[in-house]
Length: 290
Image (tube, rainbow, N blue to C red):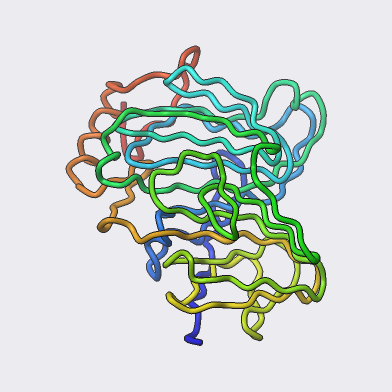
């Protein structure tokens, strides 16, 4: 087997929430449709405090939020207003222009709580980059699960391992949550061309070599791989078909044509953008003096 590519994450802070961000990186711009990967580190908030990501824009991508603990309230310029619980999928396709807000629900703020989860961005195929926006919420109970011989696979989005998620992905996608009990193993097949593993907790090996915690490990294309759990292990597996061309990621915008990003930056800076109902606060364009 060829050696996998190991991407160490950057440490970031998003409106007070600590983040690990391995993707994008100089080593790897995308894995399948995934162009952005944020691990929202497990964070304990006291009563009255929480996450509050103010109104901000997107183009050319779908955001997928998946929590292990806590809750988030999603609001967007389409009029969506949804409480997202742990295990649910919050899926938003930006199209040509969308804005949204993500914050801790008022009910959760009444007591101390822990927030832990992932948010990823999937670049839209070129034919959908400038299409209409869309939002859908998928409760945990709607996601397919396989539980066999100490290995549990939940298909968050896309398909794999004979499972298919109801999330309306726009291109061939693999995004699965994995739980392996100690001394169990999982064969990772080549049903998707591009694949990567991210270990959230526990000790694991990939084809006999230790897997680093909290790093994105990109698997060689066209080769099966075996994940082995040295202890109880929690991980995610992501990937899919390669993008239909390179993408530029600039602030919250993703596009195959840099002119689309330039236009989006001008529109947001000028205030010419769909607004989230009931919201007035917004995150200004970096460098903007509006």
